[in-house]
Amino acid sequence: MRDKKEAKRLAREKLQQIDQRTISNLQSRANQYSGRQLTPENFASFTNALDEGTLQQLIKELGVNVDPNVVRNLTPQQIQQLMELMND
Image 1 (cartoon, rainbow, N blue to C red):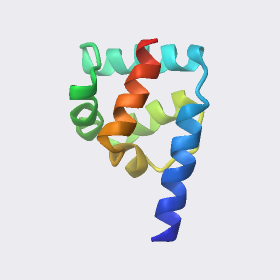
Image 2 (tube, rainbow, N blue to C red):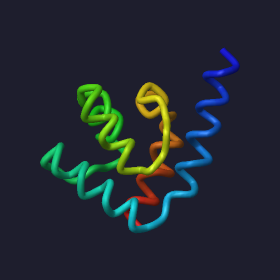
Image 3 (cartoon, rainbow, N blue to C red):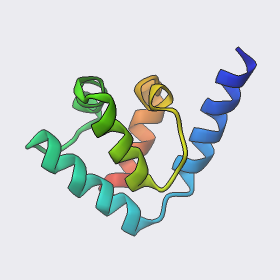
Image 4 (cartoon, rainbow, N blue to C red):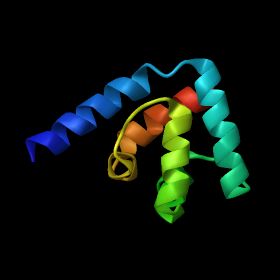
């Protein structure tokens, strides 16, 4: 349980450290996979719809070593923060 919390904390820290170029690359890659613009409303369903390999590829684009389940389990607030970063 503590490891899961630590992983989430580390994921949050890493998400806050993403530079603009990496964010642009992720958004571009995500749009290729989804065929539509990501929004806070569709981000969760988008990540949940991805197969494990594709999700790992997107995480690799972030340049972080995070368990895919951490990405799938981001809270709505964390998703909103990520989307704000991606849309800046």
